[in-house]
Structures are given as C-alpha cells and as structure tokens.
Length: 186
Image (cartoon, rainbow, N blue to C red; front, side, top):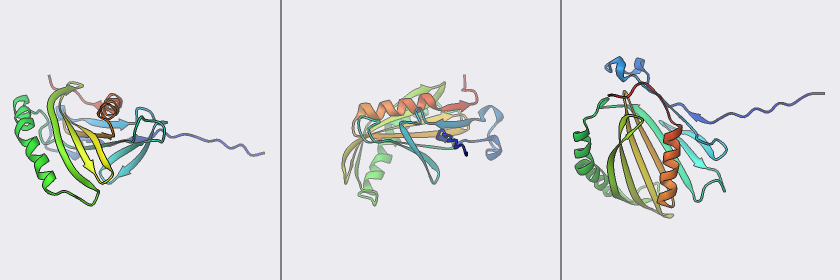
C-alpha cells in the first residue's frame, strides 16, 4: 500500500540585497531583506518581474487587498532626515503630478491623489510613508506606500485596499513580518 505525504510550502518573497551586488557600499550598510507572508493561509504569493506580490485570498480580508514589495539598491544608505523631509514636502507631490500626467494608463488607473506623506523610523531605519486616494476603471481604492532606507537596501512596500484602515493594517502586518539582517544606523 502506498502512502501519500503532502507538504506545505510557506510562501516567502526573498528579495534581498547582498554585499557582492553592491561593491561601492561599505560593509556596515550590508543588508539582506526577506519578505515573508505574515499569514500564508491568508495571502497568495506570486513573483512579478522585480517584485513580490501577495493577494488576499477570498473571504480572508474585509475587502480586496494586494501588497507588493520590491527591494532594490538604496541610493542613500544613510539618508539625512532634513533631506527626506524636504523630499516629502516638495518632490513627492511633484512625482504624483508627473504620474497623473501619464494617466489614464493601460492598467486602468485614472487618478492618484497624494493625501499625506511623512517621515518615520521602521526598525531603526528612516522611512517615508505616503497615503494615496486612487481611482481606477473599477472604482476608488486606497494605497499606502512605505519606503524603508535599510542600509544598502531600499524596500518599497505598497498596500492597496478598498478602505484606508485595511490598507494600513495589511502594510503594517507585512512590515512586522519583514526580516532585515544588518544593523540600523545609530
């Protein structure tokens, strides 16, 4: 009699930046970032080109939810908080205006409205949190974006949902599950 064994695989995004890929970054900025699902039973994972995406499984979230994470080389391993504040106040609105100038697009996005942007610390690293009201062919939705300047890695987490509380909650759950190997600046 044959015995069938079924195994489950936790869906983990393993975007990471390693020192070998960043020869111009000093060793103290070497970071590896792993982006596991906070709850594999709730989130379905897929790899999309240069980013990881999780979609909330049917009946697992209060509304339709998607979280996307990309890890790239950080252009500023130790960003200046004053420069980040200036960026949030001047460049972030300009970038949103530039995006709106290209809309509507093939993905059905019609409008992006930057509601707020602020600087915060996430696990000892500087981060920019931005809130957006979005309008697509399918209707309005909310988006929360977090850019974490984690040493040699820049982590971009986007959470989209029908309501702002759900988008925030999903983003915060993925931030809590994120693993960063390296040490934050003092």
